[in-house]
Image (cartoon, rainbow, N blue to C red; front, side):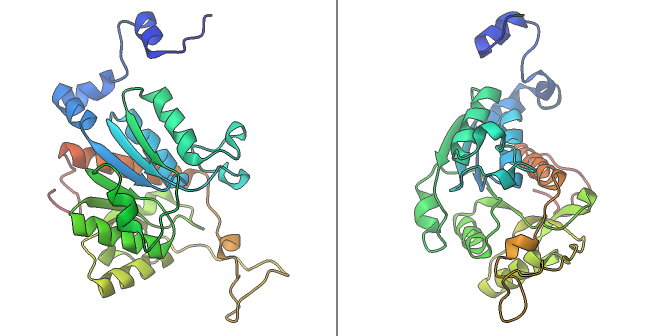
Length: 270
């Protein structure tokens, strides 16, 4: 069998079907055109962000802006769409750009391989294309708060991903305003700091599942409160949770761009 390596060859081999046929059934040509004209910014290409980005590409978004400073490492394998043996050591922005091109060649990708500095958020992000929606999929509180303030200042709609660490149940994740969150430690900090800084409303994806607790292994360095100096060493992630979260956020973003929503949406009319 001859290997098919380009969109033109696919079109020739399968003239009766196209990549957007199933979307067209639901959205029509007008909806597809709206998605092609849209720009979505994804900050962070870890488990949530990488899976979300690919779902957006498959969903017909015309322009993706992605930001991440990391390279693929072995601990990413269990949950990140960019992580394979063949991509070890490569910048995640390079890997995701290639993957998007292989899925949706019509999608333009603007990639920034850089760390989002808490004191330079506006400077860094203002230099990038203007987004219709911003997706925060990073895990550092200081940066998350600055990003939320930046999106609010520009009246950009943001969808913020909260914690998946030490959780098991994907059915417990819901979209809500940050003020309505509970149980999740990251949500608690975000809720308090957003209130203090006057940030809001802020749409988040959060679980009400209480995280599992693990004791630090013997010999692990601890701080004066008895907590591990390396907090990541007691934070685990199931393979499926970040992927589910990324797909949920992509779906939320696509529907918001299209102006369609479930009539039971807890956040109400868009």
